[in-house]
Length: 298
Length: 228
Ligand SMILES: Nc1ncnc2c1ncn2[C@@H]1O[C@H](COP(=O)(O)OP(=O)(O)OP(=O)(O)O)[C@@H](O)[C@H]1O
Ligand SMILES: [Mg+2]
Image 1 (cartoon, rainbow over the protein chains, first blue to last red):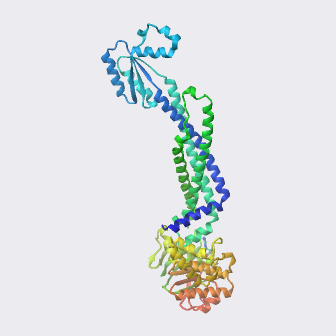
Image 2: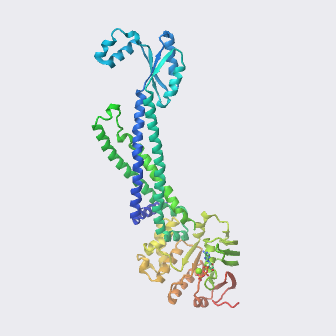
Image 3: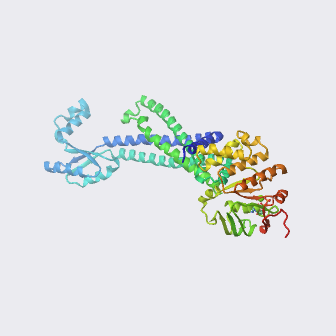
């Protein structure tokens, strides 16, 4: 296509937006609103995902070895643990080390209690996971090995965090679908108004021999511009509010207790921008195509 | 150029608008299409434009049978014809120049070609001085000239007009018909559906008479009245 034709088509699309100010603005606002609701859950989900990853990094399964195991057997167990799917690392903890850790944890007053009782500790492996979701399977596999006395881990917390993450993911997915449906309906309705207002022009175009794709372009441009504007506006709004709220939360020590640091917006910026722009363009294209259908069948 | 072979058109409502029509309009011909209201003139024209599909029969345009033409080829068929209507169908928010240039944008003409061609057709229809005016600033006759210029601007091989003088006073109607005649003299085929009895009688062109969907008479140099 030649340059002036592209100019013409895009120009027409933009002038459609202005001729149709009221419905352009209202569809922009509704789309923004749905995008923001989606964005809220998206941002929460991203933070929970980051948290889950942190927990996974910090989570340790302590595999306590039976006292009867020989040194070779202990070494063998270490190798076998490393071979299990989902295990990132297995650190050997000797009796002395376990004693040191306990002393550290109990502080000075508790240390007296432990004096001379290194013997009560067992050798163990501290196992870290590549993926929290594999927690149960890894534990099962470890229990199948010989000379294992028992496993200690914070199972309950893990399951809760994972189910929270999954819940947020489901809600976000549902909202995404809702957002797409609502936005397509809104955009196609807005463009239907333009198409209706310009039906005379469209019919003239058809008599002069315009192809359907040529007729469609300005409306496509209109839809995509609304979608992209809504996307950009939403990113801006989310950016502002997120930063504000994250700073307020950081001022309280609320999250420190859970060793949870909120993500910074710039960590999510690219992803959110991509998702919003992708949605905006996609919704614009689909919405305008739907609204054109009826008028192109001449 | 335009050939109908046993064409029938029955609308979804059950109306038989065209019944077994067969005729042939040669390249460079000027043909009137006459008949009382509701006789099927507009339907015939819509069939030529492929705005309506024939129920049976074949329509051949420029040597090509359009009966099975794919929908996405219809725009290219229409580019071979300039179409003019009774109600002008101009875009009110575009100037005379833009209304004509619009038809060239649509076929993706170059800006250079547009700048050369539009003034040329505007002068052909006698509107050189009114290029910057809007349709509502023009008389009916002038508006129809703009429509004619738009129909001509892409150099179609035929002009198809459905009652082009229906909204005009007799003098202005003559202006438009004379213009169509002039265009025909330059080699463009012209088909005009009309009720303008006097003009048809005086122009001594081919007249195809249609009555209740049937072509009842085809005069090589005929008049409007049709004795059956
Ligand atoms: N889209 C349509 N659907 C159903 N019937 C139609 C349609 N268009 C036209 N008809 C019918 O077909 C017949 C022929 O109509 P047409 O418009 O071709 O007549 P015409 O000769 O152009 O009349 P006029 O001189 O008044 O313009 C009429 O009976 C009309 O009611
Ligand atoms: Mg008619």
